[in-house]
Length: 228
Image (cartoon, rainbow, N blue to C red; front, side):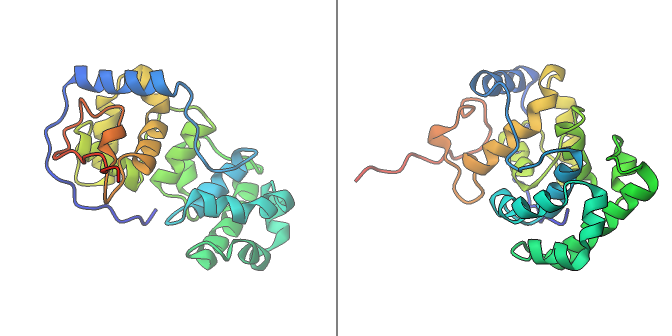
């Protein structure tokens, strides 16, 4: 998906017991985590995730509100045309390339899949603009498959905490699949992405309000800001 991953610090992998404790805590605090992209069906989810590369979910939701009203299906998206798609998503980074991919993947869904979004990683990755991370998001959210979609947040959290250290997104994904207890796999990527987005931030992690700080390998922990 083109996201740059910061070089991870070397940390020890956590024990199985510690990983179990972390995900038990996540499950206790947020039993049904949800992604933050707006969608109404498998197709609009796929398009939203393609548009979200190097863009914020908030920005994507603003751009797709009108687009998805006009084109909630592949046939409607093709009928809308590439230029009109561009006009709707021009507030998003790389919008021309993304609009081209959305138009082309819509055509391919009609030609190869009877307008339906396929439910295998191989078929999804054969669509324009769809990489492994995008495919994993769609498989997880729509098809309820226990995939791990490694974005910059999950990559950072996997390495900082010691849950799944790895030098590349694929290495972190595979390590995460092994480390996370099976009963937590379906929701694991949502918990970790949201944790990285709002707590375990890139520049200054908010360790003082982290619910898994007692198991995390990251040092030194960031202290709470001094109240003036």
